[in-house]
Image (cartoon, rainbow, N blue to C red; front, side):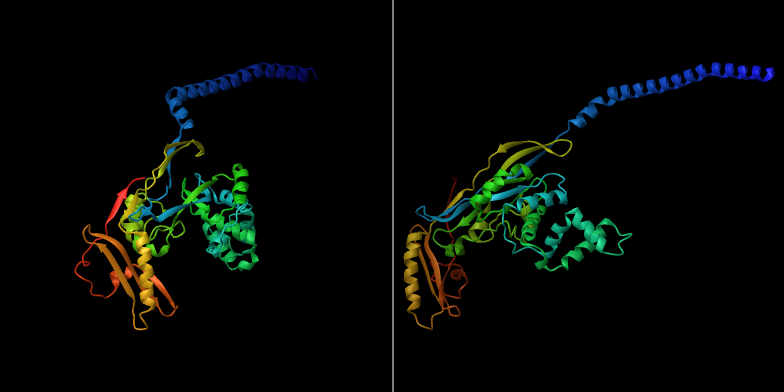
Length: 400
């Protein structure tokens, strides 16, 4: 019994003696690790501190361009033949790394205040909008069977096929309206601006959007321009036409125009004078410098250049004289009887070699009406006098 007690006391003394040693070892190990950590931090601070600081404060700079109004076209007396109409517009500038879900929220919010035409809305666009809501996507994927092992893209394509088969009548007008807005937003490039609505924008829509701009990132109220023809569109036979944001760049020249700095939704002259003098009429776009932080958020915007309106053209055509002769030609055509294939008239000032009037009046028998055209002068199989052959179309150019 005494022997047992002696051994117990001896063991207790041994354990008590080893405990401080173990604690000291732990302290030493912790101290070494702490010193190593401090050494590593000091090394990073000295060697890479400036690099890390620069990375945190890093900012990317991009230049965003804005459209300006085209130059106008005048007759010889300074009367406007082709002008510009300014319209209030609801515009959207796409941010950096915008996700579909972000666009969905913004489009849905904006659709509460703006009504847009849905005539061009496709089933695919409607399905893309519907599935941009994660809840809708999850619900559709649940209804589909056998998707195990499919990639995310393959699952999405299956969901698209499913939604596209749903009749449009199952979707509300509000959903279709939001889907059209979503489609326009999705079609924008990073930091580019598109018109969500640029015609028939009401004062109520402008006011409501303006009140909720802080809730809709990228949305703003701006101005858009379109061509107008104070003396009628018949002059388009000489001046040509201009594309709009919906039609975009002409398909046969898209690569050429993109290389010249155009955006796909820019307006560009498509024919005749509008195309021939495109470099003159287009003007120069405004330039805004956009600074992004390391999280690709817009830090600030600096307007570097306000843009310059396009230069104007002055034709040698006299609009008043043109209207008078047009009336005479119409009377002549109506009194020509059923054998007439059309009445053509060209008036020139031979001393100054200027074209004063250029028109043709052709009877469209099926529609029982007369049509004014300029192109027929060039395309009609007629024998013109020697003074007209080979003549060119003179214009004057001035800025302003």
